[in-house]
Amino acid sequence: MAELSLEQINDLLLGTLKELGRNRFQQIAQKLQQYPVISRWFRKNKIQFDEGLGIQRNLMITTSNQARHTGVMTTDSVDIPSLMAQLSINWRHLQSAWAFNYQEILVNRGKALIYNVIQPRRVDAMLGIAAELEAKAWTLAPSGDVTLPWGIPFWIVYTATGSGAPGAFTGGYPSGYSTMAGINLTNAPNFQNYGCTYVTVNKTDLINSMRSGHRRTFWHSPVNVSDYRKGEYGDLQYYTDETTLRAFETVGESQNENLGRDLAPFGGADDVKWVEATLTFRRHPIRWVPQLDDTSVYTAATNPVYGVDHSTFYPVCLAGDYLRESPVLRAPTQHNVYRIFIDLSYNYLCVDRRRNQVFSK
Image (cartoon, rainbow, N blue to C red; front, top):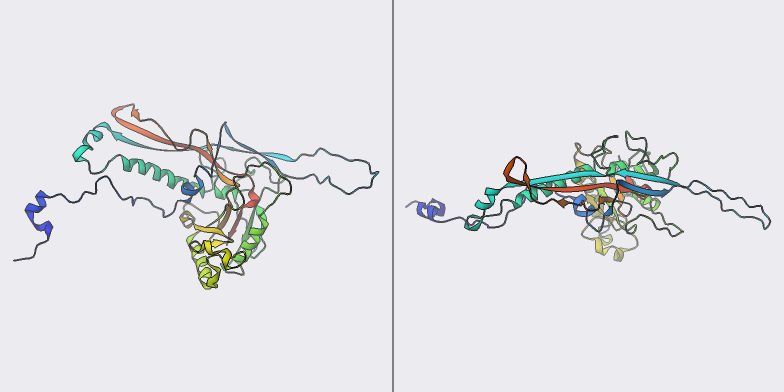
């Protein structure tokens, strides 16, 4: 007698259902491995909420240098200088939606239900928002565009400086722009990010330049000021493409294993044991951004490494419009079709560009 598998026994096939995996499904639809923008930047403890027509911040851009040593009978000389400038950005709006038919609810219930057919549609809508946020955060919005946000390439601008440390605060206007969110950089040269060119990912080139960048972008005020920062300088994150990350990993694997996973540790091995699971630079994580590998999305630099101080760069969301889901709305021309919309009004803000850095070939 010929061997049979269970699915070849006809009566068993007709009389037995397969295990249906009820009320579960595996999501394998996403296109990116990592979504750092929505998963990290858009946490409620990381963003700010504002009201009004747009986003406005006041910057103290210069000092008057009126302090001086004098004799006891020196005539006074006091000036009233112009110290301030005003940064202004507008809201950007993102939406997604999903829908269902009334009869679907009637059919997809009770013993006939294998999984809720509506749930994947909501997941699809949120995946679309995540993908759109991820792409546009690393895309330079063209000058004059009124729909796209001002993401990383707008605020942290790479300008070739000649390879090798130290770099310089030469991150001026993004390509095509003549002002920086209303700030004239001729009058406010301090509102520029740090940058440096590199050739090779090794200890003497890129990592040496990053050491300088880490020092030169650490600004500590001798005078207490109530500013706009969220948190402390410790919220520095490095972002790069896969090619550069692999090169970092090679450097990390070749160094003394007692140094752990930190490429430029402070102190000895005891100081860096907590970072063994993640590649870091001076205890700040180095994260892979898949979008930096996609030249249809990111074109601002080659093999970049961005050092983003998230106490100064973060999303600002319109209060009341943070991933807001609408009530179930009936389609105006289809009485059995219902729609749900998800809305987000936001933009990215950088209140201190010189705490941020970029390295590129």
